[in-house]
Length: 536
Image (cartoon, rainbow, N blue to C red):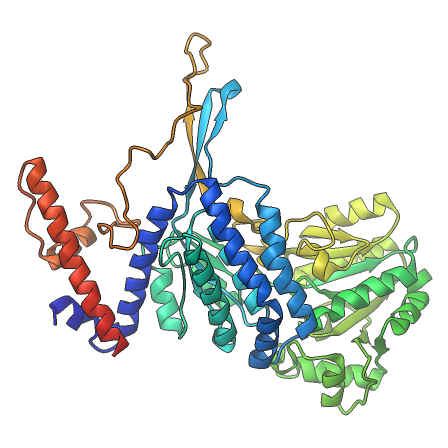
């Protein structure tokens, strides 16, 4: 066994060594994939989307079974929307071809990130895998998925199905990979790797903060706590239906769900009645106290109620609710740290607060966002454009859904916002992105800019292939090792070259070719030995 293999397999280096091999494979795949044209990329993305769509129901059942969160019917819908639905949306856009802007004397070349490291949550596991994999494919990136440990089986299955379909359609081997045994040390090791192009972090606040402190580019999101203002110009019955449908969707596990309804007194009673008719149970004062204790009695949100149904939550406080109860409504008299029910609740328990007029409602919504959820989402039900505009300007939310369910609307379903399961919270929420994350965030553009002097003629680029003269990357065999974000000449690279113990290159083109072949053959032998050792 070579010294390299012995070192990797020693003690706790086994897992990180396997991860490094995964990243090397992903880097080679990304280098090859970056040369594919739009037609080939489209065929690969379509194949991955089709297999994901075909298994949408099966994987929805698997996710609910594994995590205990949510509703199979709703998860199936999310899986369908983030597979074929997203593919059909992305197919309208070209993230692969150069743009020739003759009037600006400029050529723009798309440059993929390389390797996308995708952290996926337990709350929306399969649809987030679908969404992130498709974003990576349409932008010609490789992706390594790290599922939440509570949802690793369904997430791994989803990623591997898409990987098999993509490779069968012509994608480079290793373009989609998944960590089937995730752990915090392993995730931290990968996040800090210089081979990572960008981290897409969807999950708890500690993991998002770790991604931002990794030293690699990261796109993360913050928590939600969406207020929903219903003013005196709204249709109370219609608003009630929308709010109950939104709060009960997948047992309120989306971070875009409504947290507290803020109702103007003039229509509050009619809104309450409408919500009852739509399937809400309005809790009595003693039931509100029991809910407060159940959800927040230990100082933080009780994950034991996460994604559970209203009937299940009612049973936890000794309340027998009809089987068709969709949400539990808890009336509160204030918003603030001393009222836990005004915090984010990823379960179908909804706060309800009455205010004398719309301006008071806007002030309370601002307070709710200050409590948590800055930069995330808010909703308003109103026919008054001035109130809607004032609400949008006052509340520190970067997406405000009007007269629609907030859970789906803020995530881009039922509105014209970009469909997404990573919701950027911008500077308000300490995020680098303030919009719904899409493929455009996984590429940069090289801009070739001519002088603006009219005497300087712009070249003819119409029939040229930007990468036609580059080195060939044969698929199916290891390409020469690349350095990721490491700079040539750095101490890390010198050490790596020293460990590989490859002879210095002699002069002459023929000698350099011989050494390149020798280097590749040595690396192939080492990798084969390492794979055999890791399988044993």
